[in-house]
Image (cartoon, rainbow, N blue to C red; front, side, top):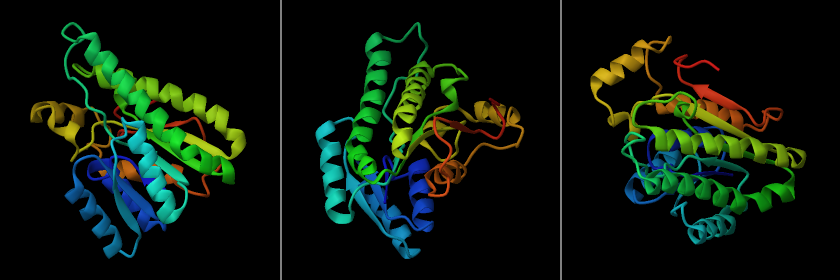
Length: 244
């Protein structure tokens, strides 16, 4: 069973649909968009899959624990965690940014990943099997104007992922990161104007920006039962915009 945080739209929704299509029961976590989350569930069920929508703010430990208990009562423990929920952040230069804005994003990003991972670990450890996938961004390694809060927080998340991967590997749990470049049909896609988008496309060897489904494919690869010997890695889904 897979838990996808922030799954009511964009990358999370595409990932939930794909994992369900590959035979997993999927928990569609959302914060406010209950209608959108239920639409994702309806799409999955219409295609013959199984899904439920569960509301929880991943910045709150009690909400996370309540969600996991609800899921365990319905379907048992979480086998695959896809932590995709986007924590709000300020878009501005370092010179204009306050510590509350930068430090607040860092704290919320790390606390959410820490708490969600802690909540699902007992079941994974008990069965000596699990898949954890964190969603990051190419901005963690390739800076872009105004994006210091997001890029710095995601760089910290990637560091956490490597340490957790090292610790949990002996227990049969893999931990990996998917780091997309610019992605169409997401909240971040509307931050910059069309001229900026065209420059991004021009800098991408594959000649377009990613769609949520492109990112979902990488997540699903990491989540697969047969992908058992990759951990502590980062998949760059950016069409060649940045190569590392």
